[in-house]
Image 1 (cartoon, one colour):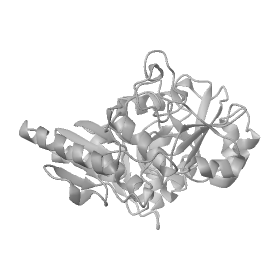
Image 2 (tube, rainbow, N blue to C red):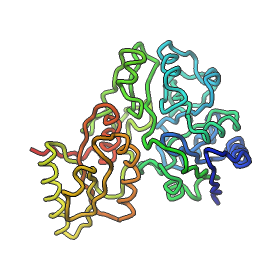
Image 3 (cartoon, rainbow, N blue to C red):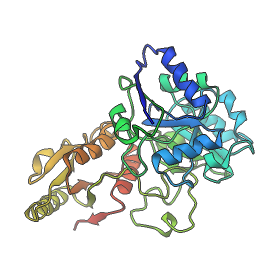
Length: 357
């Protein structure tokens, strides 16, 4: 398959390109497009064959649910049985934006899209290119992140081209627009009390302020390979079961007092280098100058969680480009946006976290 790549300015959208992309969607094809979180790999969410193509293009397990993207709240009735009161409040506060809600699905929504579940994940993105494509396609677009399964999520068109060229019909390059760098917050609103299944840019505190009580699924920040992450456990949302966001190299994180963590990472880097390994270290702006014996990349400042979120996946991919053999990194506080950052890093490291005394 030859993949068409088209550049679109989100501030001055070329509707001819959008119409070309929507024709691909309407005919069951796949289009990669930017959202305000990461790039998405889109197909017609109501067409079982399109969802199957998404799984095949990504190499994604078919029990890992897809998110349907819509362009207006009025479209919800096409996909969900009911809209709970808490869901309405959340939509009023955070849609369009980086929040996905899980509802009980209508029969018309194919199981190929929901990973075999009776629930469906819905999001209304705020990115102008995504919104234009959904409107023009006149269907909900099922769109996981536009990367090969398990790889770091794509925040640039070049990431999508690297992973999916030859696997999809079109890639829309919209790099000019701001991308948060973390996937959406996912909230299950089918129970009596809403539950966060995946943390994201919209934090628990922000959700509490809107609707009051909210639960957090116990797998969100587990730092060990729980039985829930294998066997017959069926994830209700993307990113709950399988290893995600992973660089090609082994990735080890260290948890403990900052000064001691830096000492241990430097020692481990020295040992790995002596063994002939090429070493990468994920540092912060504050700790960058204290590392040695490695390729050191700053992920951002601890004083600015948004800077870390925006660069996280790009940093992991840079280590792939450097062809390092092992990566060492610090942990972060799991509060606010830090919860989403740690959730992604824990999965990227495959739960490989060492506590430093």
